[in-house]
Image 1 (spheres, one colour):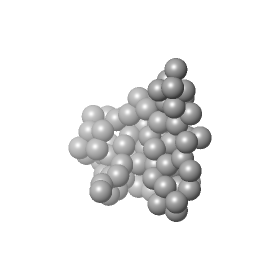
Image 2 (image 1 turned 180 degrees about the vertical axis):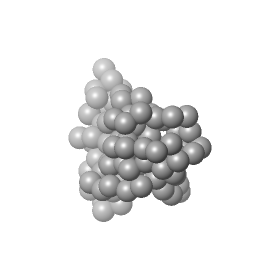
Image 3 (image 1 turned 90 degrees about the vertical axis):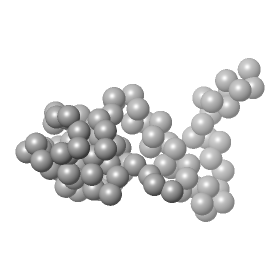
Length: 90
C-alpha cells in the first residue's frame, strides 16, 4: 500500500521544499506540482510532493493515517471517525 503524508511547506526554491508534518521535517522534491507557496500544504510520497492540498484536506488525511497506525496495533479507531459514525446512525 502506498501512503501520502500531508506536509506544510516551510520554504521552497521551486525545485525542493523544506516541509513539516506528522512530527517530522524533511526536504521534498516539488518539481511534479505547480508552485506551492510557503505555508501551503502538499501530499508527499517517497519524498516527492505529488499534489497540492487544500487546508481542509489535512485533518481528515491525518485522522486516516492515525487510524491505520491504531488499527495495525489492534486498537479501536471509532473516536477518529465519530462524525461519520453519527451520520451513519442518524
